[in-house]
Length: 485
Image 1 (cartoon, rainbow, N blue to C red):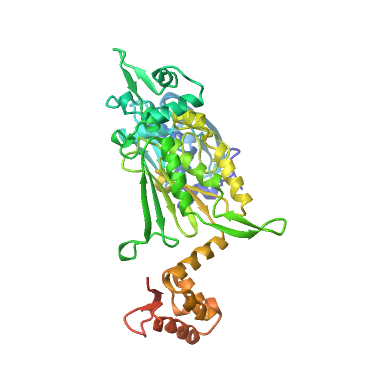
Image 2: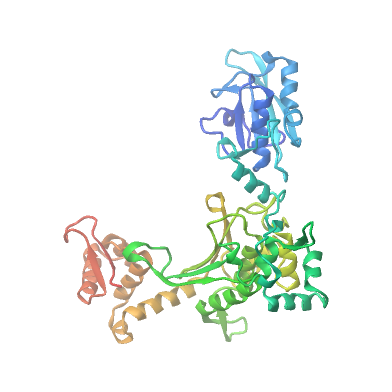
């Protein structure tokens, strides 16, 4: 039974459990000093919010009554007295019985997630990461400020870039879209894409370089997209490396979008399906809007301050992944991604909107979900790998996976040879392709036959030089079969 009116997760058993402390929960002794408690409050506020229970030590209830009213009040006031800016909290007291039978209380402090970056009186910034409250380095603090929108990398001035480095064709297309016919420098200044220094010299900002520079990578080396096509459903390495296509796309963002759309489209397939009126219709592998919006979101909302990483589009037989550097921006989280609107780079977003592409983060996400549903595909999957990337995964359907498998089979086996195979032999080849490794036991279970029968089928494919056995001997218990590529 919950003991909190703010957090139904909290029970007495949970408060004392061995591994309760996590991203959203921490325990502190009543003897903690207010400035130290403030660091923990700051960590939760800068992350995802959470609850701190005061009055538990080594998983045992010690209570708070013995520290006195003044100390308790100082702990409650820590979010105001020792946090800058102040952190919004709710607090409550919970009646408990200690091991010795005495009545006491616990103090529960519920910290709200904040859109600001909070620090203590010593100008130190903390962040809750897992079950720890970590003090951030200067670089980590900058990243947090960028993520929360307190600092905008897109307005950083790049003095080395001049108006002559910009792509005039893209600039004129933009000016035409907004109905502007004057000096292009005035439009750049009006949109906050450039400023004038004290001497009146035009200073271009990061956003202008990304949107309009002929070669943005001269100034921002990772301002590019990489498209990678893999043969199969996973990434292999070494001698099994399965990259079949690798392209790097550079240039101003509007041209990157157009080039990438062509490249991705050339690798997608259409297939025939029975339509609602009993007629066969052509259906694309993925909804065009879904993957294009995923690309545009990545280009618009990525954290361009992160060096050493670029946007990657990874195409597999069964899915398409779009991964961009940086966590979800602002207060956008995986749990509210369809509802919260936010732009990490509002100037870039505005210009791309004027090109007719961009929506605020959240608005386009909703449409991606709707489009995938219309195509009877799984919901898109958003993840934050290692807490430093945003990854969108679009899965294709079982029909498309079979088409790709059969295409792969036809590249290994001639149509005449394929037709000559038994259904069980074809099944074995497909399974070996999907799983990379196929054991006799696995194959027997898949076809509902004995192991001896399964082994004979697999060995027949070895005789045809379509499969090869991998093991120290025929009696090796770890023996498996794989395709001869």
